[in-house]
Image (cartoon, rainbow, N blue to C red; front, side, top):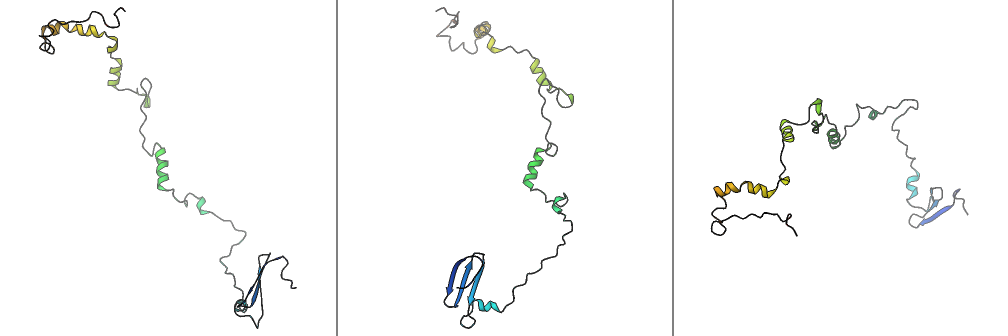
Length: 176
C-alpha cells in the first residue's frame, strides 16, 4: 500500500511499452510512477529538464491611476454609417425636413395663413349641388331650344317619334 495523494484516486493506468503507472487524483493532479532502470521514454525524457519559466509580460505598479481612452469623446470610434444615417434622418435640421403644411383656418409657419389664393376662392364660391336639383326640370329647361334646333336627337327620332313625350310624374311621385 502506497500513500499517493491526500484526496482519493480516480483512475490508474499502466502503460506496457513505457513501463510506467499513471495515477489520476481527486485534486486534479496526475502522478506518474516509474523505474529509472526499467522504464523507457515517457516521464524520463522530461525528468532532466528544468521547469519552464514564466515570461514576464510587463510590470504594473499597484498605485497608479488607469485612464480609459475610450471614455473620452475624442478617442471613441465613430458609429457605423448606417446607424448614423438613421440618427441624422430623425434630426429635422440635418435631414432638411420642410415645414409641415398648415391646416386651413389656422395660422401656419410664422403667422401666415395656411391656404393659397386659389384654395380661398374655391372655398368661398357658391356652387349649387347637382344632387339638390330636379333632373326633370333641368331637361325641360333645354326643351324649347332643342325643338327649335334639333342637333342631337332630331334626325334619329323624326320618323319614329315626331312628338317628344315626357312623363308628367316621376316614379317616386306616382300614386300606388
